[in-house]
Image (cartoon, rainbow, N blue to C red; front, side, top):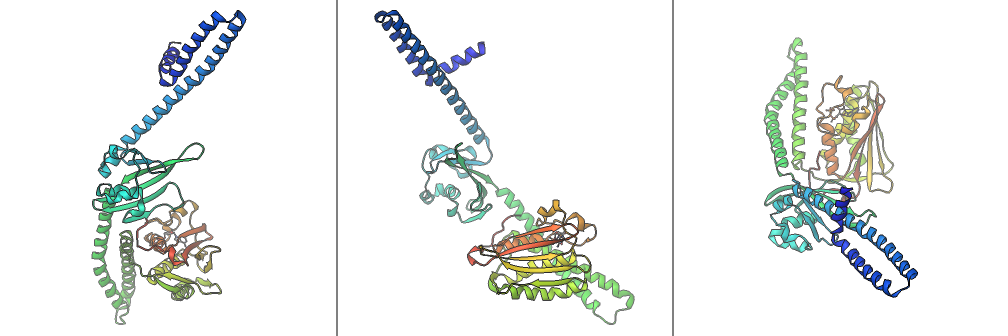
Length: 441
Ligand code: ADP
């Protein structure tokens, strides 16, 4: 009871209730005046109506005071959370009127919230050196290096932005703020400072590059020595197998080192692509004819299901050869004896893409691991046991090369029945990324 009374007194003092108390004063004066001038029954009727109005009025103003207070509290709590966040938070209405600019954002952009709150932020602000960084975050199209991390049509939108002066790497997540009926109230940006993370990743990649470079030269010399001995007719019979094994082992090691070098170049965005218009069908035929011999050694038949018409695509021949080589080598390596491989090409209906598929009759991929297939160093449980060789880098390289061509890669598989690897390439050159950028793991 006491708690209810305290609650009543708390809300009774709120500004929303003032109009109600004014009404009570007015109603009391009316009651006094009319009790003098009006006859008894009519006077009671007026009192009754006034009491009814007072009850309805009280309940609505009291509820309004209560809900306004709850909203204010929520607003304050939310601001408190934003204030204490490590990530920068900026919220603005559809007219770019800044409504939230938290402490982390103040530090990141070296701007005080007082200078910017409740002002309309336009792209023109980028001409002022103090607001340049912030304007490139609010309008990423103004930023020098922007890497999209979500599709243009997806919400929230995620982009990575790199600045060189001052050195800053940020991931910006932009979300729409909607009311319960879905009306757009504004946007919120969460800005995560990734400068340290990116620099650690860079130095790790530099280490791998230097180590791999140092290993490659002596390994090439050892491989060359084994190769010379392997073809030397004068080598005694008892040493031939040892030399041959030595050559195979060195070649595998060299392949691992080369894969590592490719990965670090890809992650640094300096794999170096030179795209030229190519007849895709002829290109696939050429790669297949080289691989046919390897397939035969394993007793595997290889077919090319080619379309009637030629298809032109803009590709980097060397890199795309790496893609097909990887997919075909896997289709051979993870196939069964006397298995089959079918390569097919078709234009995707109503889309400016061509789809290539490599189907095998091999061991397949466990369903619960298929989503990790293109991750760095991934090797599925079912092959590790019997195929001890492999780095798990091939498909990671394949994915990155295809993305740089504006395409995608994915796989379908049934364990112990076989797998199909699909990839797409755009036939519209405008869909090929202009600059080489690492699009993430
Ligand atoms: P690696 O073959 O060197 O292990 P990849 O990146 O080429 O590396 O392949 C990663 C893993 O994906 C393989 O270890 C294997 O588990 C699985 N995989 C790839 N291609 C196939 C395939 N055609 N059939 C079955 N499993 C495959």
